Image 1 (cartoon, rainbow, N blue to C red):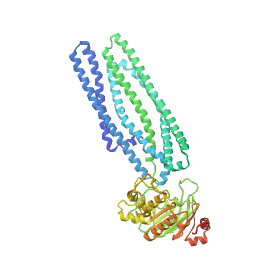
Image 2: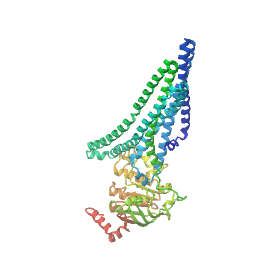
Image 3: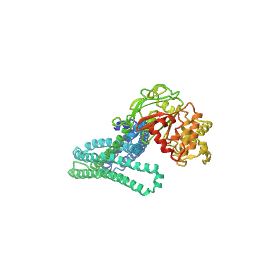
Image 4: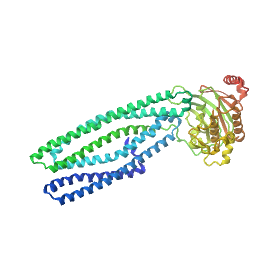
Length: 575
């Protein structure tokens, strides 16, 4: 798992090598210092040789300064390596998410994707930045210190053979119990993000229904759950330090007790015992660093597994059959098409749908709520993949078109309108980046944006808040329609995208689409019969099945569902 994560180092791999070199060299200079100190005591102090003491002291200072510079270098390179790794993982993960189909996105909750893209990556990033130094330093220091310790006095160094297994056992018990807790902690964070996201998205609804206290209580519940899970994980993690200190102080006491006896017996010099204790501390500090690295790795692995779930998600819509094709006319055929969201699902959302839309036609789709109207049109640009049957555009199956070409040629104005932070003209140019002001004005005239654009504070340069909060629902819908028209697609799908527009303005938009874009195939999903009555043909959907096809007059004579919808909407209104 970690091997896969580190494969994203890319151009930052050089910083990992530089950090490792600096850390290794720093350890060597630090390990030389106790040897020099032992010489100062056993030779300089015993013989009263001040020149020797001064000479060795200056050498110690030099080694310490070099170790300090190398330590600063290792910290810098480790930080660059960690931050670069985090940036590359986020970039790769975000790119993968952009390739998701609607079905892939449905597999993950949006709040979980946010956590995996931010908190989980940050955990790995920080573990590398702060953990690289001890991860490189501790093994080198421990092995070197052990070798020197055994060379000073092998009998005294045997104490390590008892201390190391004890520490290893305690560390294993901690890691085994804390590992699943880190996964639960990130899942609890998902829930916190979910509540925050829902509240900010629906803040106007919360205010309108005076549900602030309810939302506060809901947030308190998930926040308390995250706090409890985190406390349990970190409480167990914190046991690492007491366990380490228990082993460390036990080892030091044992060495002082055995070493003191050897000094009294004359088999060990005081300077040797002093130097030996310095190496003992080096070894024990190394063990402590290694234990902390293991704890960080445990948390990183939990986050890495969540990230790799995203990276390993199998893309449901691919371009394996794609050829160098373009949509020329916008002729659409559904040939016995069926669809269900999951292959293992028992019931189909759409069942045996067949119809033909000719180039340039305006087609209406109408039906009761939940009759799968939106799902039907989402199959055309392959936002979802049909389960059975085939969908053809200009006589070619949709899977034979490159996705970019298909979706540029089949443009949807979704039921849920979305505008982005930025100016009005920035949002409009999502449809066509290099659109001239004349093209923008023409598209806005068709979508009736020209009726209100002058009333905005700065016209086309008006800054829109997140999601277009400073324009009305009808204005937002018309801006989204204008944005889609600017692409000049071969097929334009309006998925109930005039529901917030008055009937007079809606009629003007339909008329503009028909007269000024006669060669563009237009599909209109609507709840109102007035929105589709002048369509070339109208499709009636009922519970995922095609109930009827015809013009307004034909369906009014022959289709019972259409008659019922007509009569229900006729009350008090002249259609």
